[in-house]
Image: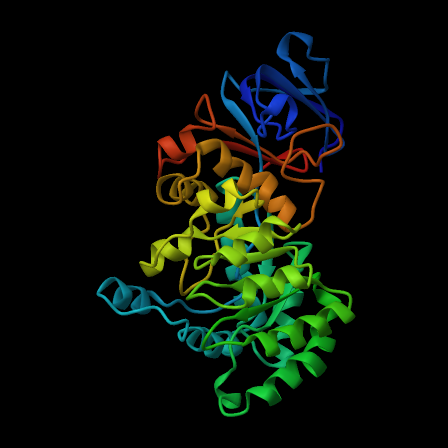
Length: 389
């Protein structure tokens, strides 16, 4: 890694996310940013920029924190393009296709799984994602869940044990036995490689009692709590997550007033995944309702081979603005600082002194262009830990 100081100069619009002056994005105009040893050391007016060993001229472009994708399923084999085509022809999404990916993942070699994660992580980085959470969940036995997390840990510090994704076919008639496996031998094998535990709390997956038991076991093993909740319909998942102090409840598509109130009175982040609604032709979450209630909202890709095969945070930002009634500023904040909050990280998602120097330079003068020009490759350059990538 190249060390020494690096000045990013001639920034037309710098998004800091420092929240000063009533502006959550903390936008600074005609700015510069100094990187030292992989961290942001200084930001301020370009005319006051200090000397540095190296320099990048942003040429009047916008500079943003790197995106923080707090929900992704990257360890898998195969794809489900035929399933996608069937949905576009009118078939309803039920989540049942997960078992198809489980079979392919179990049959894949470590090298094949590693290559898939590396390919998708590379796509994400080129599109401005500098921090990503990666889940297991396509092994669903002791050996394959543990190896999925070992491979995920090669690419990120934020690994999540999702042994409770669905009940695998061999336990279809014995869900209680599968919950015991997840809470026992599977958790013991997975915990050394995971930071988080997650459960898909939905009809057809795990009910509230099973989810509570699994998450409590994960907490006892030292893992933080995350939860897939309220994607396919109303249910107990959101309030269970809040009760357990989850860092994030994810999807939040079907919410009651009680769910919104619970989130608003908690530190739990609502992570919205508009790529899933796009890919399943389902109703989008009402982000406006959550934001107006004072809920902290994050955006993430939900990158997976079945219901949201996108690695693009800019695409999700554009969807959030167009379909979920977020302003461009709210969507950018949710994709950066919001994602950091969902991972309980204070070192990413902002460009202020002491933060990790993860930033993106746009081929555009403002963050507005991420939603204004959907589908256009606007990421000109990415710095990760202060190093151009």
